[in-house]
Length: 139
Image (tube, rainbow, N blue to C red; front, side, top):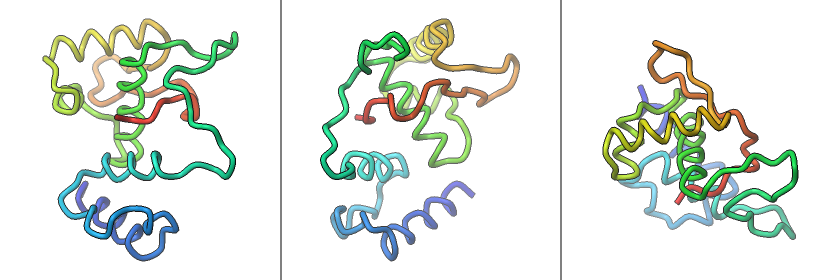
């Protein structure tokens, strides 16, 4: 089912999406949906837009997080958008190449900081609480 969605996304990108000509012709073969989303986010900028800073501006309303926390938030957001459900901690462990306790501590830290919300006892219930515009590009 997940790969059906990916194949739909891949066919849309190949045929109709205006940004598909930015991506190399054979780049969609053998890559993950997150890499596709990252390529699109990295390639597209509105005309005259400045590159986004890694950490949001220091205005009083802006959420504050470290660059590593920003990467976890960007991963959670991108994974949820592409796969249609939030990631499991094991998905984050594989992506970042860290141990299970490291991922769990980061999730707890993000939750304490008010950047994400989880429902107790419910798997894959992570929800990003900040605006997608303030997230860094997933590296």
